[in-house]
Length: 256
Figure 1 (tube, helix red, strand yellow):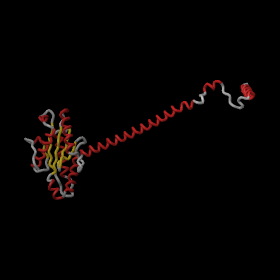
Figure 2 (cartoon, rainbow, N blue to C red; figure 1 turned 180 degrees about the vertical axis):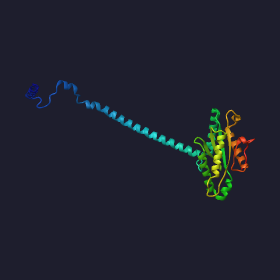
Figure 3 (cartoon, one colour; figure 1 turned 180 degrees about the horizontal axis):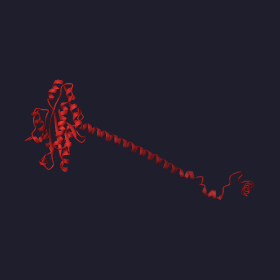
Figure 4 (cartoon, rainbow, N blue to C red; figure 1 turned 135 degrees about the vertical axis):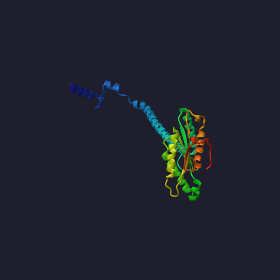
């Protein structure tokens, strides 16, 4: 029945002569279809959205590039700080970094009422060693001593070349016994070090800040002064010795 109706409609249309094979739209289809000018009406908005997407992608790429630049800058700054704080010959921390670390560690020890020790080491007869074998051999000896110090120090200790043939190890949380054990272990390792030239020895001294004691009246620099006095006492005793500042009646600096 439906087929007959459709055929009848087609015949009527052909008889009318107005469509001649063209598709006839129902009234409902006319309401759904957009007018021919609709594509022209929407195109500016489509182009604008497309441009906004391109701008957003470009902005994201710029942000990613800036993040990479910032990361590289931070890494370079960290590298520069490390270089500025490191002794070039031995790879240990330098004097400035040690003094800054000492002040911070001392302030923390006072606040938290924790012990803090400093060990000072001086290579015995180093000038004569340099004179006999040359500065290259002396540099090699200092690098070997620095490696031994690093091997004896804990991860949170601060080991530094203080100047020349002098080294300092900052021991946060270590009392007299801990400082003495570390210093004696280091002294023995230096004396046992194999050398292409001749063996070397070291004289060591230590000082300890203790909470709830007279040491609370010290300044941070006093630890270095007392450790230095103890080290020179070791030299006066014949070198290749360790002395703690508690053994001294009046801690004072000495001469080599």
